[in-house]
Picture 1 (cartoon, rainbow, N blue to C red):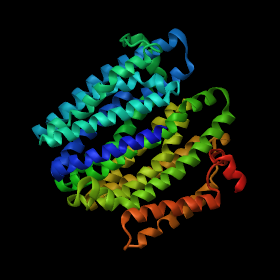
Picture 2 (picture 1 turned 90 degrees about the vertical axis):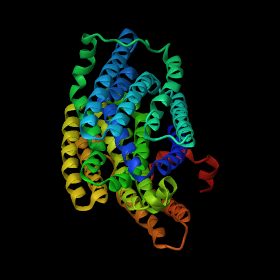
Picture 3 (picture 1 turned 135 degrees about the vertical axis):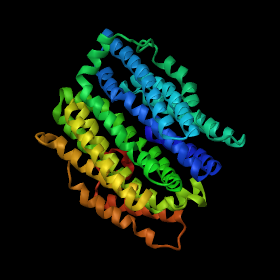
Picture 4 (picture 1 turned 60 degrees about the horizontal axis):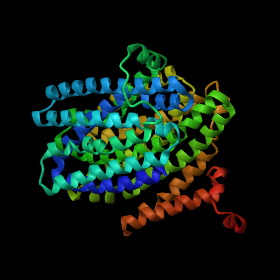
Length: 463
């Protein structure tokens, strides 16, 4: 349900992006993506992992203690967001021209509204009210893209487009408050003692989330500083596609996180079982997403940006590898969080932030935007591999079943063969690639056996 609503919203979002990028052109698209990326850094820094921690705590706490955590969570987010918006605005006015700096400020103000709505929605996730969460997110996407269409029709310049995320979040803020008003207090708490009780146990995790936020945005910021305007424009279009799809791993694994949290507290064997199965499904989906982007990159870029942006197709194909690996990385991250391994998460995140900065910067100097894409792919694959090793070290019950890996590799290799059929339309190649990948997985039984339960009983008997 979560992924279906996200897919619907993404289709609308890609339509809006296609209009937006064609309207803005290559150079202004680069400015737009830079401003949005800096605003997203504020989102990550001001979250500090508190949404995930809040979800974990609200899933297990009750009564006054639960209310105190909810109020403190909202107060912390409001204060940190205000500080974060001020910080990136100062940076933007020092580092960029005036128009881009103003765009960053406007985007940052939108983050303030968005963070308020997202924080209020945490109890919906903690209680698995995923239908409402999905509906609200879809409404936000529809509102944002309706504004983009309106501004394009009005011939707006860069700055009005920066207001769309904040306005869209404001549209669903009141419905969110109405849904949770009986579950948590809506008034924020600014009591430092309450903040300390929430933050002290997870401070290392919060720093790790800040590092992870920088890690994800490192590439586009480095491209904006080290490469030319056109390189930034091409990279920005590809990054926009990958950025939207990067939400899917969090949706898939985040829906299971309350189960991870309970199992980590009460039933280690169940946690190992759940992590292993979610890892397998995430691997299957992640490889399919990467494969589909590689096969369909040319069409995706042409639809979103037009022929002016076609040099971004090869960049997108490379970034698809990083996106596919992130599905697996997300499983290990939520597993560590459920076990409260905050220090391990910190070392993990900071190490790969440093690696990303070094590798991506070096490769940008060699090959511009393509170098940045290669760097992010290399680092993300490393994160996915090392995360599983770190989580299972000393915890044999958390080791995933790796027998699925060669089966998925074979399915992906065969699924890539339609790329050799140059005369076929791209859509047909993507469909053939997906069918081949799925059939090979079915023949090799590379999927978790529990998924058999999704097949109607009549079909299972006939099989």
